[in-house]
Image (tube, rainbow, N blue to C red; front, side, top):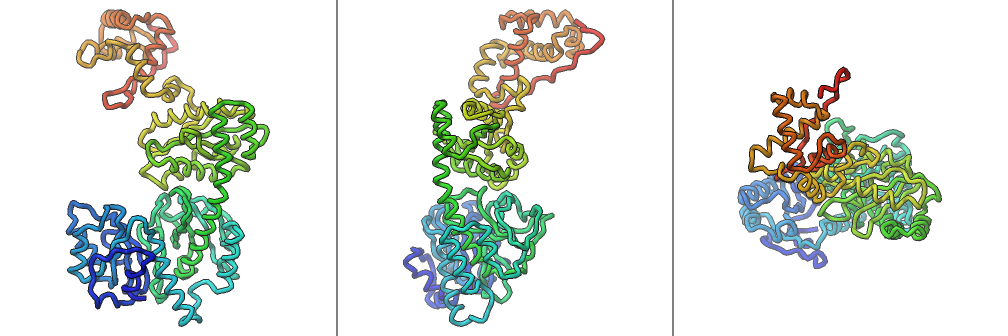
Length: 550
């Protein structure tokens, strides 16, 4: 296959930007996809390079483009196909660099998947292999390929497909999610947990697998992480609508156990398998969404019927989880929650979306214990997205599910308040202090309560107001002890008495009453700083056992 054949393929809709006639006759040996700024060591002679141009920016653009294209030329690449989605078009700096280094370049429209281009090249090459290299065992034998196509057609599971994909004496191979959950393994893989290379990386940093003399076949891979078992981890590309948390990877501890061409064919079949699973899951999701609608409507009859439709047992205990990813894509929270629930290995579960878009799940109480350790592993697959979740207390039966959902949503709000910029899961049963309980109250409500209760004490323009606020905080932290407050603040006790009277005057509260003390302490906990953060009140001091020290 020549460069001209690829650029002129009408089904791909590539936009040629620069080339010369003599350069278009060069033979294509393979395809490499990379977004490394210096890709030279991952490119083989004769390869077409696909790049999404994530590495390019307007600042220093000419230098970056020069370094990238020079690396392609030195490695022997025959053409560059540049994605237009990231920047809207291919930067002129890059086109000029390609012209200087005699590197044909074309734009890839945003609607064209890179997979379509790699498939076009490899299907052409595999056709040549069938005619000219039939004696080689670098790819699936014809009878195995037919067997796998049949398994996909009848929607067999990934374990059955993986077992049939390798020879009679299969190497250890694990089909994993981005968070390291084992979806399936070959019979020779053995039991036990798999240490995932580059865990938490949802996208490959490069796509080159050392291939010897196999013709330059490349597949998307993860780089080994320190402490992993090495090997090779290959991305399973699919047209299914899956989030980064649910993406599949084929991991072989022995990188030399199978050639890259074989891995590419096997992952292509596994991709079709995942597409079938996603199609089947759609019907299950519809039933779960119906349960979510019934829970928000709080109709006992509808809840019971919807629970039966989802396959939930007639009796609990159940736990409910609510999750969201803020203003980002709504499907990210649903994908993260789906993967986290799968990590717990429940006998049954319902995972769907509430009418407002919040993801939710109902699962057995015994499985819910596994959510806390699984949550950070799952969220690491998309580190730029802080997904928050809240877990309810146990519910004995379907009638208690609406209340459990309310608890889960409250715990979700607490998780967002506690760690706004990081993934977090909060268990409602852990909200056992006033401070923890208040984190679930909406920020606007907390701020309004603090303003109305503390009043003039929040005046940031006056030194006297700041002194009174500090005195109140220390006084309550020392359980209302005049003497210990005076000692902690290095004040005379009469000064403390005077300030407390002023505080009572401004707030209308009597600090000798427990209820008023609690109101003021809650108002201190609800304060917000000008930047929106929550100040940390002075820690409560343990009272001495020898004296009340009033």
